[in-house]
Image (cartoon, rainbow, N blue to C red):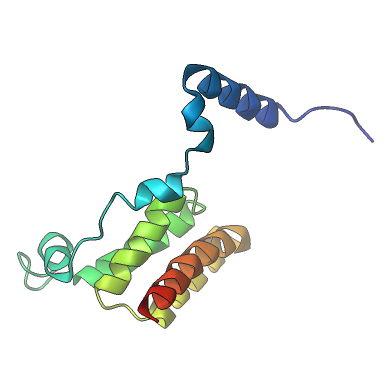
Amino acid sequence: MSDQKNPFEDMMRAAAEMVNSVNPAMASFSTKEFENLMPKMPKDMLDMFFGTTINKDGLDAKTRLLITLAGLTMQGAQNDMLVRQTVRHLIEAGAHHQEIIETIGQMSMFAGLPAMTRAMNLAKEVMEDKEEKET
C-alpha cells in the first residue's frame, strides 16, 4: 500500500482554496443552477439555426442535435452543462426519450462504457426533471 497523494486532487484542492480566498461566495457556486439562466431555444428557433429552414435538403434540427449528443458522448461527456442542454434542446426539437437513449448507447461502442454511462446519467437527469415538471 502506498501513501502517495494524487497530484490531480492536490491541484483541485489548491484551485478551490484560491477561489475561496478571492471570492468566498464561490464556494457554494453550482454550475447546474447557472444552467437555469440559459433558456432553451424554442422549436422554431432550433429549426432556423440547426434545421432545414435555410438548407431545405439538409439535416433537421433533431438529427443535428442527436449528432451533437453523440459527439459530446464521444468526448467522454465531460461537459455536464452541454450534455444536459443538448438533451433539453433535443426534447424541444421533438426527440423521443428512446432516440436519445439509443444515440448515447450507440456511442458505447466507440467511446467506451464510462463515457456512455456518464452521458446516460446526465440525459436521464434531464428527462426525469422534465417528467416531474409535467406532472
